[in-house]
Image (cartoon, rainbow, N blue to C red; front, side, top):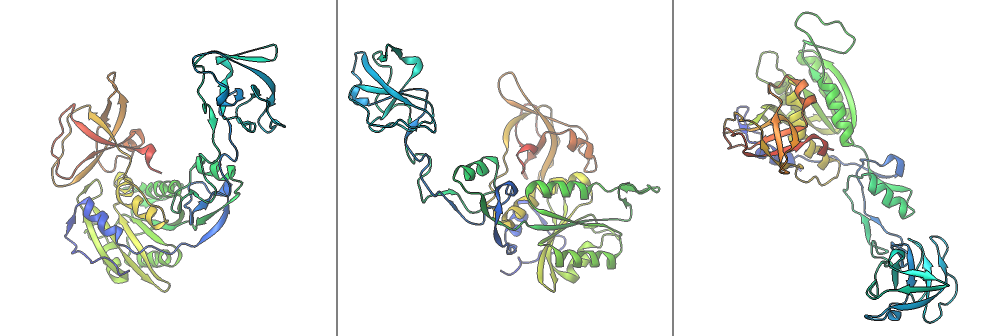
Length: 419
């Protein structure tokens, strides 16, 4: 697939336009191989997982009680049945059930031949080897799990492209499957650029700061299920930036940089991208996160997608959640859905200028009437990383929306929903 048509450097895209361009980028080929269950969490299935047998494999009791023939129940009258034996989970009733008889049964036990109903033990009474069932206690067919009602043999239990969670691993184990066909982890190289940046442990000279972006990027990539590759800090020198990008292009499926994406004298990313490949866009009507570049890097093994994120820490995280996350999931072979937002009311008035999509940090609480209320964390500066740590998520203020009044409905994007 050819790269999307480049945009001029001064073209300011809406978030939706930028998303559409990102969706046109060619995805890398990720091989599929069998991986043990305990290594499969948060990985992407490379093929359907088919149920090798019916689940449940037999009709079984859904409750502790007594298994019986529904035909032996008397409409509007009590029933009296002889207790002929018992069935436990893993220990089935053996033999034929006589007429007008029942079997003491525990949850999960296989239903005795001919039985199609379970009466819960609290709705009946056993005395002297006989079961007394009051009128209307149970109907024929009640409290039985039918063979194959969960999964039928030969049908997909898990579908290709699914990002695996704990329940999926349990489901595979319940089918006796110990290895799953998984896509190779997406390799994502990342770097931070800027003369003012220092790594943890280095002394801070005047005007310098510790780099936080590589640590948040590593955490977001790892949580998403990618294989992060840290390219380190790169000074504001075009030759060193080019060398780092070439290294990332050779080693990874995607390269992410933070910083140097603006139009200042020391912002070299855009010019370097133009020399090494194609630039699709460089600005998005997104706050925080307006300077955001996307393009393709060419290298000996082909091409690699490059995403140039802003240098401010909050802008890096917002841009990742809003645009980068979906792209990476698609590259991983997953089928990402819409971001999981909920509806809340604004706790206070919010300033918003139409013509850009804004994501403001906020906390969330439940009101006595059951509604959610979102309260701004205060200073929304894109360098105030502390407010991201305080926040429960982001208020989503749409492109054409203006100021928000207190009590007005808003969309809220919880951080906990962002895998």
